[in-house]
Image 1 (cartoon, rainbow, N blue to C red):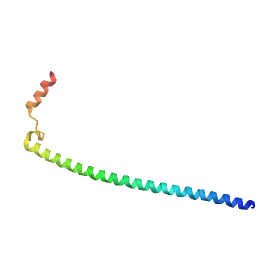
Image 2 (image 1 turned 135 degrees about the vertical axis):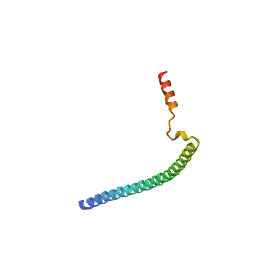
Image 3 (image 1 turned 30 degrees about the horizontal axis):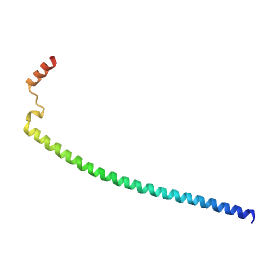
Image 4 (image 1 turned 180 degrees about the vertical axis):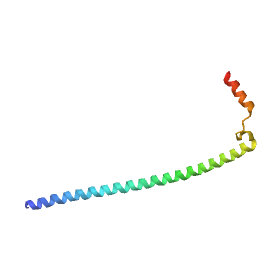
Length: 93
């Protein structure tokens, strides 16, 4: 064999190695893509669940606020002058 044949065989192996690395990297990127898609789907599911919980909590707060307004009208911001006097007495002690 001539030296050129050895060079061509060496070049063939080098190119095979480069192609193997490229395939390995391509499979790695595909796996990362699949994992990220699964992660995004999971985040979307969690977001939907949390939005539902938030809506329920806001409804509960609205209902409780309505009940408080109905049951305790003085909680609307009207401060009794006697309560202020008691606050002053408690501060002095």
